[in-house]
Image (cartoon, rainbow, N blue to C red; front, side, top):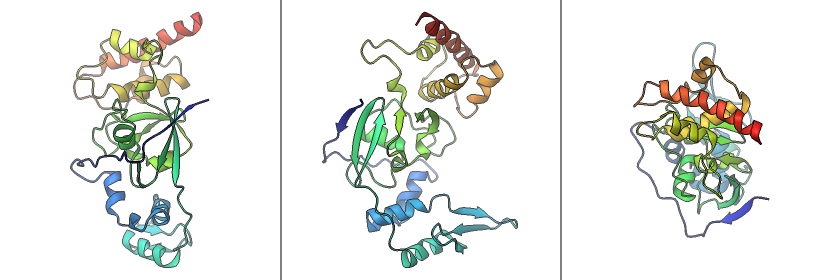
Length: 256
């Protein structure tokens, strides 16, 4: 059974200065729909993904409650506030299982409705192995596993992860002995990094790949890591590390 860890009430995430452009977290926070509290926050979250493009190429915003279409997001927000004020109340707490530990986070205290997972992992849970790069879903640096699937934590709301299992780079090594996971060991032995800031995302993407495809070809490995950007290397050593990790994992399984 997962060990439950409840954070102290006074512990709050520090606000971070956003990078140039607008991240998903910044957009959610600045949209102004969460000011009304938990119910309003839930209503706003329900608006995510409401956009659609007509056959004529015109962007429309569709009300998730009555399917009425609007020309702007502000019009949709005003409509939902006026016509659908009674929205499902957000839970007071959300539960995340991170690297085998159960965390109970209180909305409005440890986490806000607009917080993305990468900030919760780093600022609240202090798991700083997950890195922030572009903060726009372009570089793959923030990749973690959510229920076994590779996911960009800068593009995932923490509240969307309620009840889910999350694995970060800190969760791969043996927690008792500190022995590296075979994928981590393969990256070390094959020099699959230089500055190392992209490495956690590379390794987590590799784990998602090898969990599904234990013996990938070089082309399959390149395709799997296509969304992970490294500004130091030519990717040759990274791909070599992925293929070496596959071989090492097979040897480990055969011994086990």
